[in-house]
Length: 310
Image (spheres, rainbow, N blue to C red):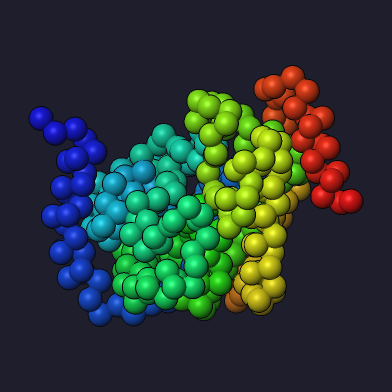
């Protein structure tokens, strides 16, 4: 008997033709598409969960994500289930959620379009070879199926492709999540140990500098990873109009999430239409400070961070 992964691959291959029939006639989404970007472990999942709970926004959940070659089909099937859906809980494990309607990063979908080499940052030739019209039709059809603007979050796929995404989706809004560098580094280190089961294994997004960083000591690798990703994002965002971007510092978001939710709402609905739900119920979040999983590593990270300013 085939395992679930093989069954899902066969299901997607079977449904891909139907998906192409469904997306015929679509050209581009009507609403701004929201892309949440940032270094890994910078608070992107928390921001995503929060705006899902409080804005009228569409997103790919754990059910729909199983239909990466037929997302419109997946969205229609999920809607047909007519499930009672409670609020998204604020639980996640390295970007993964467990509720059937919990958000998913949709990695298999993005890999259909973004053909990575050693780095997650695509070179111009690979960007030029993307079937952008197909991507636009897929997203537009999914938007119609959900009857609301869409939000996507996938740090490796999206954070280093802002220029391409802005060209392809001119109305796109970019939410850049940032975290205190030391805490971000400690959290990635913990991810290496708990998720990768190997402190020497690279965790998540590989910037263009990956080839130079991978041979360095672990503190230099991780600090260099975060710094390179944020510098690339910030450089790309320089070309984005102010009304299409927002920087969200993790620590400030935790203290006052409602103000950021309202600001994101204004970015996607400049006429102040649409609904902000249950904002009075949105309380502050605990600012998580990662443990020192290796004795003395905090000092080594701080030394690397200090060297950035020399």
